[in-house]
Image (cartoon, rainbow, N blue to C red; front, side, top):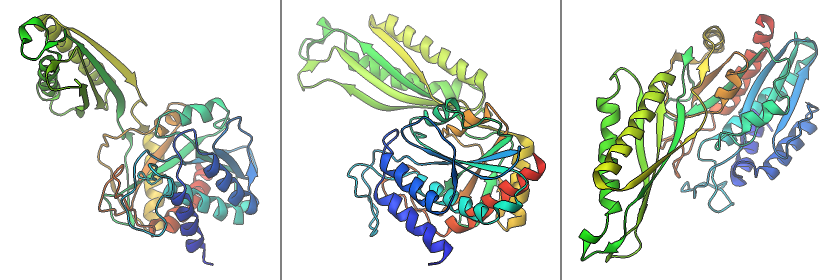
Length: 373
């Protein structure tokens, strides 16, 4: 079997058996088995899921990272290796990322004696719930590491394309939950109640003005209400409506400004309608900020490797690789996967042709980074 086909076979097996964040027990078992059969050296981490291995000898350490968890999505792709775990799918391509770094580990193992240091490869759980990176750091996975590199497949880029940027790349992520508490009443006598649905509707409309009227148009901001829950029958004004949504920004001052505006709008509408509105913010990862020098280095290696490279646009998605970059320098990159449907879509279907090439790129990147660390 060819090297490329082996990686594709591993990817397809992972794709058939996806697991949610912190439930990646079988994924961990498979990854460990494949690495053990290849003779990789395991780094002990006190975590129920996830794997860390090392290749090489010496004091200098460069890290590579893959993520292994999937999403709670029913797959809509008609392929022989479609998910067998109902309601769970690798709709973000973490099976691709894992296969890429498995390949890099095998390639580095082949030239272990020539490596000018050690490469530590992290197969991280729980990226989708933004907790995995913190868990690996707490377990010591970054000890003595000089720099770290990771990837995300990019469905909007063709296979063979590569993009990254120095400085801010992925966004700050905040989850927003708003409770609108009114007063229930018979729908035929609305004057006796405080209509939580009307208040919530006014709030949704008002929130749409924050990005367009309260923030500099040159700053990147997304504020979206993504869920509304209220009422359970046709002839009763409900007591309560719950809204949920997300805020995405790249600058911390913009992040705080928008949150303050949302809080103020909610307080104003509560007073105007004699309602009670509670706003709850749940912070996800902060903005992913690439080290400018390592990002340029990663792009130079990609040029040398033969990728078609470009400066990446700002990305409004969140990525907990940002947590590593708060501790040590490094760079996160995008590699084209040419899917008709985007990330987190039930019909997401990345082109497997990217896997072998990306594996060879990351093995080369790690080797060259050891010389510059």
